[in-house]
Length: 622
Image (tube, rainbow, N blue to C red; front, side, top):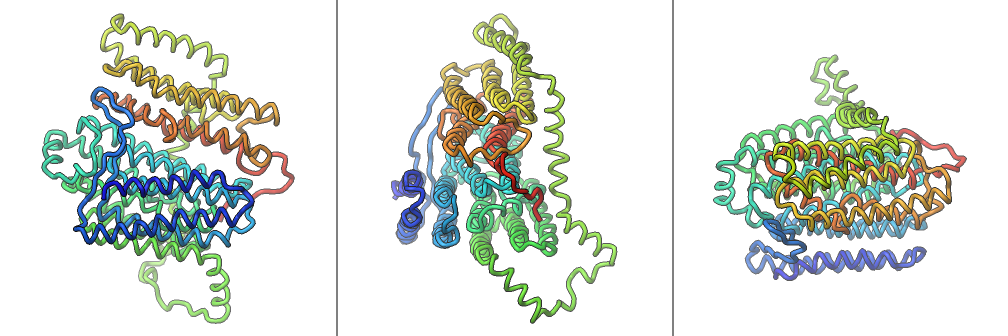
């Protein structure tokens, strides 16, 4: 039965790859291929599920492909199947098929018809990789695919300002979730000294023996899992991104932000529950934050004027309750709650365009106000205070900007003195000196080497800070992003046992992507002239092939699972020592801002209203 697990990954992959080559104007062929791919997957899985239940529903673990193996390190694909996977795949396959059917008519004659179905199949591939993953590395592959497909679906109406702006905002939160997983993988390597599988995590004796002398390490890993989960599932303080994600088409809102993607944070906590179930402090934190999210999101949902925003915050509140159930150890109830919430929110979002007209008619003819609500029992001052707070969504957006993104922008502005000439004049000689010391480590003491790792990782962080806040030269911003990877590789090279073969694996993908992306930008500059980062240019309208080429370069540079950079990033963290907290902080922060800077370049140059358009645009959503 284990061999069938590969089939459930290969089928969505084939469906997505074939869809890329279908004719753009043949809507019937595109829709039928999507139906066939998803329906075949759904029916075959249901048959497999029946067979699995009849044969005793034993957990299945398949170590499939070893992609890279070195001294003390192994990167391999592992697939795992148990009741959690069964529920998630059953719900996911059924809802994806229903949304695909709905979308055929909903998006009829939409210019991005093929692009929408391509992205849905890409999402479905990533979703299946995540829920079938048997280790963190395999899960992270699907996690990254979900992130980029989410960005593309929110920015589906790419000639409008608000969808693009909100897509970048959502991607920024997803980068926080990405780095939470990377840090969990980093510390897991040092705790287990191997790529631990979820199958082994069910061994209570193994976990107890490793955490007995490393309790704080266990707490750190659990908190990183929790950070990734709350960012992905829009829990406090990250809740404000979910309603903004509704700028995409209604079908993508239903499948992504109502049912499947938004529940993947729940999936991570359920999958890793055996690891942290005996950490009482972590369980209390998860439960308390889930309760706080449920209460606040319920209040916000009650005062929303947009039906999709109401559904979004209602879903957030229910997911908060699911986190409480997981923290309490009620895994079966959490699974039932997930399935019920997913089906309900999908239905609500799909009928939301019709609900508006129904409510208007009801308001005129049959409206009967509630006699009393729970708020009427509060003192008037508390009622008014809660109402204003909920209308303002508890200033969650302002909170994120003030304490997360504004400090990053402020730090970036402090290095505005760096021009292209100064970058070349200062950083290139410094890098060459660092390379010389890497090859001649005997010339400096161990303490100096430790200081150099901090220095070079700090320079890497400065590069991406400058790239993130650069407002004029797109190509300079791109070069700084690429330089960031080289500085990180140089910093970690001073740690022992980090071979140059591993550096070459990491930097090979970055180098090819950097050169390709630079010449793509140069080609666009020759055609259009102005490609500064001070506004949205929308050049994908006139240059779709150049936009697609640069998007591929962006994915490769951010470590998307199509280049050696993806493996290289994991290699980098596997060689950062468990006591090198400053180095790990600088590198992980660099990876967050690196992804944001790259997606910002792509969005500013290729998305949004075309720079030569004469039409007005909306700069604020409801």
